[in-house]
Amino acid sequence: MSAGYFPKREKVGLEDLFKGLVTACHILHHHGILDAYGHISVRSPDNPATFWMPRNRAPALISSPDDLIEYNVEDASAVEKDAKPGYIERYIHSEIYKRFPAINSVVHSHCRDILPYCVSGVPLKSTIHMAGFLGNNVPVWDIAQHYPSGSKHDLLVRNTTLGASLSAAFKPTTSTGFIYSKVRSALPTQIAGTPPDPSRDPDYAVILMQGHGFTTAARSIEEAVYQAVYTKEAAQTQTKALAVRNAYYGQILEGKIDVEGGGKIKSAKAKTEGDLKYLSERELHDAWEANQSTLARPWELWCREVEVNPLYRNECPAGDD
Ligand SMILES: [Zn+2]
Image (tube, rainbow, N blue to C red; front, side, top):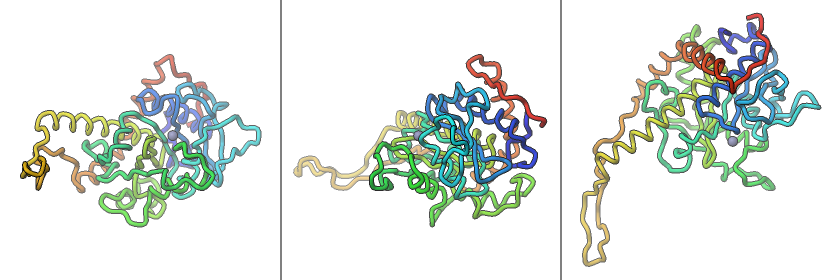
């Protein structure tokens, strides 16, 4: 197994990278992050101006280097003129690579456990220590505010304008609370890999997309997969905890009712007994830092899970790693 498909750029050959990318497709499908839709990409190790992602095929069925396409970061065009058809939403990936030099892998997903937080107004927050990277404020990007004139309103990120808008949501002009890039820059270099520079990193690891899904950006394939899996875990935990809390405590209103006025509530406030416990700012920071050095453990397990499952075929030759 590779020691990492980034950030050790100079040590990663393309063969190894392809094998890792195909494996990542299978892992993300196995964990319900990708179904027939959604995708993961990785920046080229020897050329930061291009990236690789699967062709237009269900991720579980991607199996060989022939299923992978190299794209230009500049405009998401295929490097090879006779490339097979690709995913429409590859602009998500190209614009994130363009804006953030430190980002080397991106996952975009329509995961059903996360969708409620894309439409309900209930904020997704970190309830579990494995998802410290989520912080206490995961922004929801609404494509309806950004369609260029003449564009289809089908919620798909199908051009560079929409891709750039989504990418900008990862680093808004003003960010509050837990800031991913600040935590990054505070990490020891032996953990972060390359010397820290907050301007190269997004402020958020995950952006929710209104009525659509989510996108996460990371420094390596392993980290992107980790963040995708644990964003789902965090959403599942929060959803179940909210349901349990509401079933137990109910919704209690305290106040006055104007009977003569037709039963209108004159003044009232909701009792919030039993609010969920979210990670504190300090816990977010320290949990995220602690988990950084443990990514190899779930990665090894997840590789083995898809290796022994006959649905998944990885026919990429092993590199010299
Ligand atoms: Zn999508």
